[in-house]
Picture 1 (cartoon, helix red, strand yellow):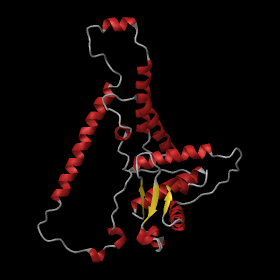
Picture 2 (cartoon, rainbow, N blue to C red):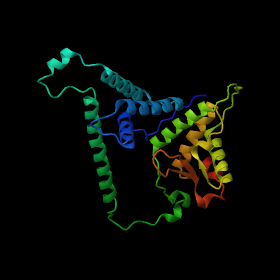
Picture 3 (cartoon, helix red, strand yellow):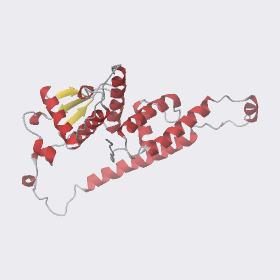
Picture 4 (tube, rainbow, N blue to C red):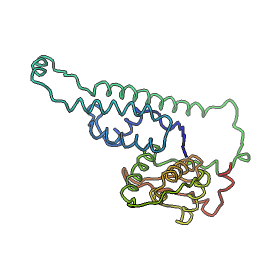
Length: 259
């Protein structure tokens, strides 16, 4: 059973690198290649498990990071040091990557500014707004500010995979069982209701079956998209918790999921 997922939340390998640099509080002009490469490879591994169809460009960046890391491990020969006696600026293998990151960061910050300008401009109308609240579903009107982003979810997914590998039994019996994302969404909601609407992200993955793990992860993302659940994290690197909306703890979601 294969999964082909395309999401606009992954903006590209440079976006992932910037996220990791900010997350690990690394100086962009002095990148620790060993640490950033290890973190990046963990995220790429999680993408390969999910079989994301745009993971190829992330693999290209992974190869670039490994190449830079290997170049930095090479010793500098005595002849090279003599040739560079009068050249203060010795070429750093990271220079090209740093320039790309700085340039990408500028465009990303400009995009944020443009979005803020758009939101500000949208506050001006040529006529009074029409009240359409009667035509809206109350559940759709509820907006939630996520405490985590997609890369935090991907990192949590990678940690969960490592935990499953450590706790895997020595002997298992493999049986094929297909389950749809819609059914797994209902199962996640039922599990949350049984735990008063709040449960650790890792406790939603009780099985070692790959297809079930991937389907459960995708169902959580879909529930977040539909604003049925939200995910919070108190501090960096803490465990994630999945929360069901309080006003819907006693309601049924079958109609909303079937839409």
